[in-house]
Length: 359
Image 1 (cartoon, rainbow, N blue to C red):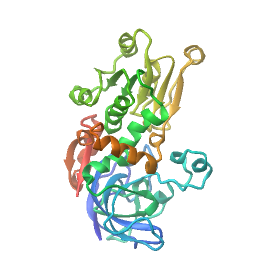
Image 2: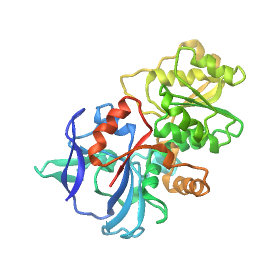
Image 3: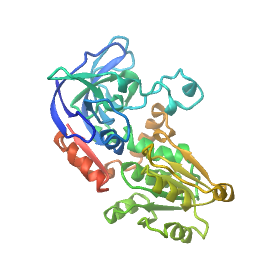
Image 4: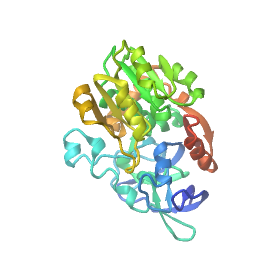
């Protein structure tokens, strides 16, 4: 048995209760969580924007300690510290074999398989196959990335989604080059990580866009050179800051039609808008038939920062150890499991950066 934050229906209340995890099966490990971040994708699962079977334990960004290994697990042992990977590649499908493990067709297999039962014997599903809003979880060994034991697990948890996605969007998907200009739209945990990614890439100007004035100081401290609120004249204002051209790159971290359109409009002719935010299938983005060819811009989607966590987490750790990557600054609130509902409310209101659950 373990404590978990259980959600039973779309937009329902989150209740902390005891659940019984499945036995640790072949190829699986049991992990005691040290910390888990509350991501906007968790809110999208909770409100029905993304599909999720219920009852569910959400939470897909976390880190902890392996306490049990199943049969056939050779690369992990009890006591190992790990970051949880919500999109583990199978290494054998077409996408994995062609260098796109972030598009693996089997990455989300675990999300449709119950991983626990409630006290009333209801089957419980793990959000994105992880179930990180629980003191312990059972997960595939291939979904665990070992990290050094001297790395604070509370900070390591953020590597599992926000930092991989935000930094990866800049370095892997957009491939920002030194001296280029970057706009980051939306400053949750992913957007703030993208600002750091743009700084690491050597961007000459990093323009942060968010409606919350309270985030300005943090954005500037992480590497933003300018901070703007979204408004009707945003594109014109960005062009004024980029020599009259518009930005070379825009990184959209919200996932709404209007912000995707704003990111597109903020780029120069020939620029690139990279869409990171996962939005609703009912929220269209519109372009007219003239502008697509005339502006010669590129719009690309970015899943999980276009990363391979087994490769990219060690790179991020090098930046962290060298002081080039600030993980702790991304955390605006710390709560226990009872604070998940409040974290969702802050997210809906656009308040704060990352809420971290500590166990």
